[in-house]
Amino acid sequence: MGMIEVRDLVKQYRGAKTPSVDGVSFGVEKGEFFAFLGPNGAGKTTTISILTTTLAKTSGEVKIAGYDVDKEARRVREKVGIIFQQPSLDPQLTAEQNIRFHACLYGMCGYRPTFKLMPAAYRKRVLDLAEIVGIQDALFKPIKKLSGGMQRKLEIIRSLIHTPDVLFLDEPTQGLDAVSRRGLWEYINDVRNQYGTTVFLTTHYIDEAEKVDTVCIINRGKIAACCSPDEMKRTVQYDPTPKVCLPSLEDAYVEFLNRTGREAA
Amino acid sequence: MSALALTRKKSRLFRELNTVLTVMAREITVFLKSPGTAIMSLAMPLVMMGMIGGNLMQNMAGGLGFEFGQFMLVGMLVNMLFMITSTGMASLVDDHEIDFNQEMLVSPVSRYSLVVGKILGGSFGAIVSMAGTLIVGLIMGNTLPFGKLLLILALSPLMCLSGGALAMIVIGLIKSKKTASMAVMLISMPQMFLSGAIIPIGNSSGVLMILSRLMPMTYCLDLVRAVVYAGTPEYDSVVMFNPVVNFAAIAALTVGCLILGTFFFAQSEKNR
Image (cartoon, rainbow over all chains, first blue to last red; front, side):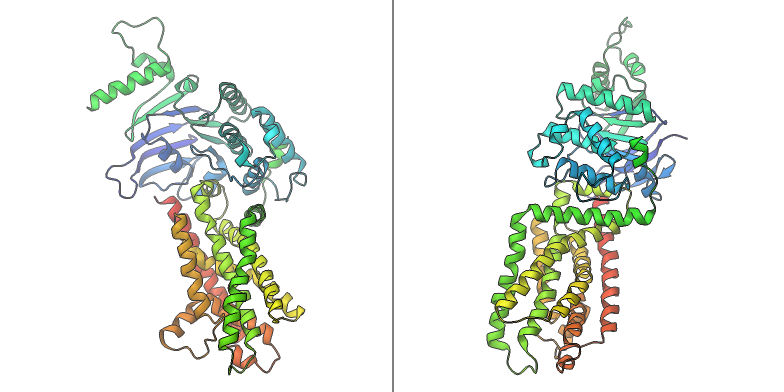
């Protein structure tokens, strides 16, 4: 049984003439690192929203960890963690208060009015995660006073604190500096190794998808390709003569989109 | 160890109650961090009780068969609970704008717990306004016995839940701040005038009578007045229904509005 099973998924927004996601099917195995790539407006965020139960689909079948997103939405929500594309923090709370809110909603611990009164296990986990992403000094500052990059790091902590089985990362490194990006990926790899977490990534930094198990490209709401990064690189050789070295995934991705765009035209 | 200790299975009931508490605590924290909101909550009674109420007392209070000042004070107390809780519910639109609703809706908890937590949290500001109303009433020479005040305070969560649930029906469907502000007025004003908060409705008839009977605040007010006027000669001229009828009507209307409002809210966020 796959961790994510998507079959003939269609989503057409109200008033839209064409579907944003049009008959998409793919599967992700437990522990797999899966990159869902595509140009702006291709349908990536729409797909993630449906997979995380925050958006209703028009038709098709979606299962997460064997649970149907419509009929067993609560079970699905227990299994997933997400970093949304847009920041979703409460700017009036402090960084730690935002994490506490999330931890309590996930039933990790009972709500207490201050950090000091929260269980020791919670406090340790928050401090450990804050150190990993480098926001320990900003933990008790209001969100309003944090930079965009700091807020992103906080969202990363929040999405991981309940150790989800499937982690959805919708452009997680947008706005992060190079050091933070590297730190984040090292940590996510640690989490994957330690807990066998399945990671579903969308990103416009194609180099971040170099080490994934599967790359799936969505374009104009349809799946254009789904294979390993190496396979994709081989598929889109620029020259008729095979090169000794494979192109980078980004080269292959851009070439692939150009080619499919030309074919569609 | 820490992750395992934290993710240990908690009962469903614990999680839902914890959600109500967490969402409520967030609303209170945000209220306390917004001096403007706190000042408005205290200024509102000055306008409602001091100006509108004071004017009515001076010009319309004769020949009613009961002391209008106390009648209106009770009306204003309940009106404040309804109005401020409804205003608090409009913060759902703010949460939508900052995408915080996504964070709440992706969590594995009941939508009802989220909404009830939101209403109870919003009622904190309403209680502050209620205290403000009492102070203004005191200055105007209208007071209530301490024991009766405690009883009103004990009933206030029910009043807030009722007001918040009613507001959810409209606000659950709204996505813009401007529309939300207008919606709050649309909910509050008819309640204030048709439910008997400041104008007795014992002689209402026709459409106005039907509308007043459909409003949860009518029963909330009547229940509170039944508590305040219990054992007094004015009871029969002030209280319209048996308290049991009031309680049943409040419960039925609140549950109905809560189910409908929460459904609208969840659906409008999910079905785009």
